[in-house]
Image 1 (cartoon, rainbow, N blue to C red):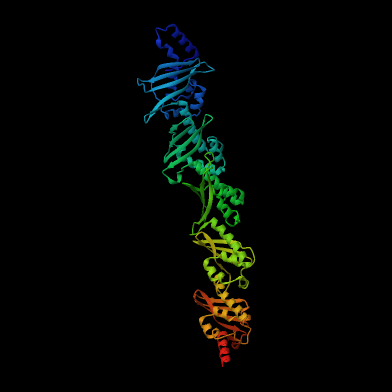
Image 2 (image 1 turned 135 degrees about the horizontal axis):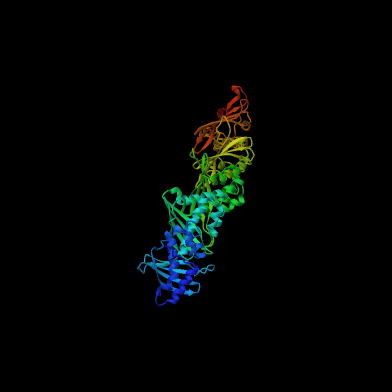
Length: 602
């Protein structure tokens, strides 16, 4: 039955009621009854066109702006049934408040706000107020408010599912919108798809908790639910954040706003790193990480994926106070560790700043931290320069306790200048590779014409040089082992030159002391300029834990020094002096001096 009246019919009905007040006491409510009946009938039949005929433009804008809106009235649980008008309150010539009752239950009452349409003069429904009770608390909500929010939820799902940047940003409040707008397209669209998940294919059945200017909407999905936070800005509901609770861990997002903040910092970091823009890097890195590692580093020595390369494969793990941004390449997994930094006050948003980057080998067991990489590179540069310039104090300060004890603490500045280190060229090292092995890091460099390996060790967070591996043959490639044996050899030669018996005793073995130095009041003369046999290049070194044979010079001239370990150091036990290629031109120092001492005593 069609209960809608034309304007002429409404006027005739009103005149009839005025003429017959006693016969038809209910005529005074005929206009209201027919308007509300037409509204209810159109609503039950989901007839959008008829609903628009009997509702105001405001109602249409708030509740019928989407083509599927009429189906969403079931979401807000509008009471259904025949409505009896029980009260009409005339506010003015253009507004009435009508109370209707469904059935005989007073608890199922609705209040309607009717207004006169400015163009047609007809009375139309401008709003409906529903009284609800939950947990003993009753509240009254306007249908337009509820439908406006439900429609906004539907528009949000469509906007985020569409992948339209402008539509996604349009649905966000100013703060959230600015944050999302700062993301590159590929990050924003992937985040939107991840957040929407299976909700785009599900029916919109939201559960809402509303206040005046904020609302919290729960939207069930196939594998969990989405929780959307709305803020009303200039009478429009806008998203301020959302969370995704999923039974699948990979789909769980505790806060899209926090994730967007992480993505913004990560994308800026990767882009700035790849272009070498340290000014921008500073804005997204923790102060200590930037100043100690990134600022002094040559970033091109360690490659990281660009933001674009990371966009399709990144994974984000949000945790309390920090987050991990991970991206896999063909042979590595790169993890950006970010720490949450709260704003200075409630009006300042929290930030996520990168505090380190870790690179994992997919097919190996290497784990490389960018901070350690760059610190090791800086250490190598400083150490290489100090070695080549023979700066003893700097070298001593940057070496491990073992390296210092075996070499650097045993020498002074003049002796530092005598150490045989021809492989350490005065050239800036170029980093070739860096290998991490737990607390030990090996940095291979091209330094001048040679490839060297600087071995660094982490001791309680302090990175120190443990050794330098040299490209040599005929002797150990360890600088530490080489110098450990050469220091007493050079000191022995110097003491011979100075004819210093006391110093020679300290540098010699117990056997050499017993047979020679303890018997000599002065250096015995065996007819050779002894110290000159030591002033030739180091040619060979054969050693184990307790014995070392040092070859100086060649078969025509030089010396072969035998050292033994006594206590924690090597000492000279004997020297074979080489003055020619013939056997008679090879002289054992210990034997020759014993003979000279016995001849002198005789």
